[in-house]
Length: 273
Ligand code: NAD
Image: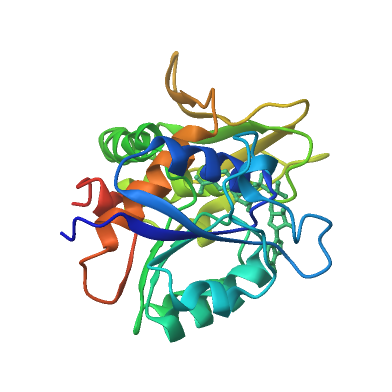
């Protein structure tokens, strides 16, 4: 691995995750903030990224031209919105730099476009970048495999802050996918995303989701596996957004010398089976 610090671009630099990424880059070895980008028209374009993130001025002025920022960078950290991420995927592939995607709520079509960029670029995408949640996914898969769907019902419960715009969360879906893998079923064909009114009894073998929103909660997730007379609960609490930022930066460093491809945090953390 090269010894010069990896030059990272933060897109969505004024967002909750963008500001956390800027603070975390400053605190981590082996990386440097190369550029910061916001959407055109954002009141934060032209402001100092370090000052905005509460670090004091660092001389990186927030711009609105992603390609110019990517051209001399080595990796882009992207926690923005699905449409913006699809656009950044094309630009990152064009600039041949690493693209770490934390954005959630992408449609199947948007996911396909982001995946396609992995033919030319190194893309790491995950609905949750923390070590703890990725380990929880592995444990969920094992538990779902060990506890058969004929007798055990799986429910994924999540809570996030009131500003979150997509549901279920990317993490809840990641955990649902892990449970479906453990059961050897396809999540799309077995998930129950909402219940209201006279729903009838719970269909066997389904994976249910329940979504709570409120306050400033960063992310609470539980997988409940309910059997006759007992419940197994696996859970994770995020107390600080820096867990996602550290994971995203580690993913960029990991991908630095990899071949083009579409990777997940399980690959980065060595947890893929
Ligand atoms: P936020 O709304 O605070 O920040 C998003 C930022 O992106 C905003 O500042 C917005 O102006 C900017 N943006 C939007 N379009 C842009 C464009 N075209 N160019 C440049 N900037 C653009 O949201 P947040 O809480 O920081 O979350 C962002 C995303 O990350 C969400 O999808 C969220 O679910 C996801 N997230 C993922 C993880 C993970 O570990 N994968 C963790 C936390 C949040």
